[in-house]
Length: 225
Image (tube, rainbow, N blue to C red; front, top):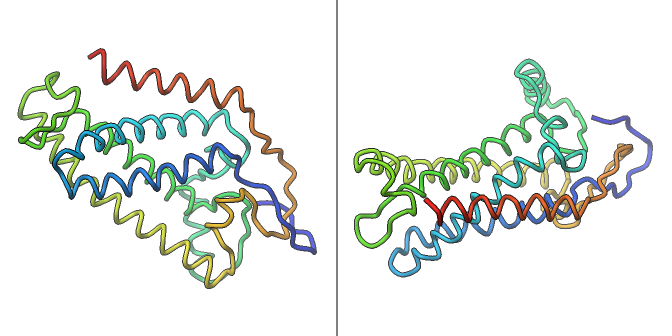
């Protein structure tokens, strides 16, 4: 939370890395939903996109420590006491301003990331009993593989529930708070009367190195084992 100034202005909040991550995640989840329901030959792409989503989440975890100010977990992950206090103020209609994620939004974002990580990880061991098996299916017993397959199926429903809650929050911000979160995640800017004293200049070299190392790790995981 930052000090307020008198005039509203466009303030840079989200770096290009966060925006690319966000929209890639949205597209990936959408495709996985479609391909999972469709089945058949498209399941090969379901697996490829699953690997990509695993890489995205691992990259976001790294960027949460080395990225720009509002991308860091330290900026938006608050303790239970602070988060509950914010929730009470929110329910009372009190206005509290944050340039980045508010405490509830921060925990929502992390929960979604964890659910996608579980989804991608269990998919590595899953089987549809027809023609598709995850690349690590043979590394565990059949009973464990089918337990992970069940988790994979149930967990996606949780992803849809939390994604729905996220959409509701976006609509609330647009209609009630008159704040377009979609536009902010496209441009990286928010219209705010808060002064941004932090730099969010993207370190492209660090971004590319991090993405490359994560991609290499995922490639080795699905091809070497």
